[in-house]
Amino acid sequence: MDAAPYIPEQYKLSGRVGRAPLVAVLFGVPAALCGGWLYALVCYAVDHGRAQFWVSLAGPPIFGLGIYFLLSKARCRSPFFAFLAGALIGAAANYFHWAAYLYFKQVAMSTGALGGFFQWARDPHELLKGISTLASASGAGGIGEGAWTCEAAWTILCTAFVPWVVLKTEVYCESCGVWCKETKGIAFTEVPGDDALMGKLRTGRIEALLELKSLPKEPPVSHVRVSQALCPSCQNFGTYDLELKKIKKDEKGRESTSAEDLAMEMLLSPATAPVLGQLIARTQSAVAEAPPAPTAPSS
Image (cartoon, rainbow, N blue to C red):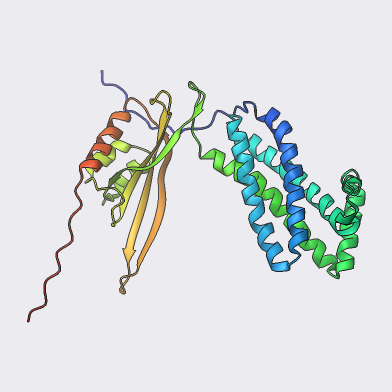
């Protein structure tokens, strides 16, 4: 009796939170306090509209990456918890930012007392009144309050979505308790010419690539790229990605590229691991076609 054909399976994180709740409390709150204070200090010191805009635009995504790094070290495998923790830490950072900014603006640093900061931080109602008063004093009014509301929403969205999005792309070996190491571009092949073969690739059937010509690494033509995430401990558990990269040139010779994900984070198995090994060996031995040598102009 023939064995049942192998059906590729896509990897999913287990959803376990690990030590993330404890780490989020012990380190997330101080990070929100320090981040909010630093952000307020930069905004107060710069005091230039355009510079403050770029700081408020770039700061939250960077802070979100820091939250992801914190949760990944705590072995969090739950994108939902990463989203929730990131949103709460971002909201706390934005709150502390306004408490510190109002302290810098109205109490002034010359007093040298931190009591003004805690006065704003301990009472949300007074904090909102202070923000409204600051908007009126600056002449911005409702426009300023609207802009600051958008700034707060941007901060919370970034600190929530950045850890969520990045964590969803990671692969974790539950047996070894470590994150897998990703290696981009371990094998390359030509683009399939028929829809049937392309359909197989979209379902993760990596063996279909054996029917195609292998190419050297990063070829200057359209190709299918194979990447891998492998457990650094056991070297057995991991996933592979199949990506289509199209390279075109217009009439003026200008090059344009586009990429498409065919199958992402497909689990390695006893059936696919040998195929992947063959593709790697074929890419390593592939020889790029040399361009024709330029002909010397006739005299």
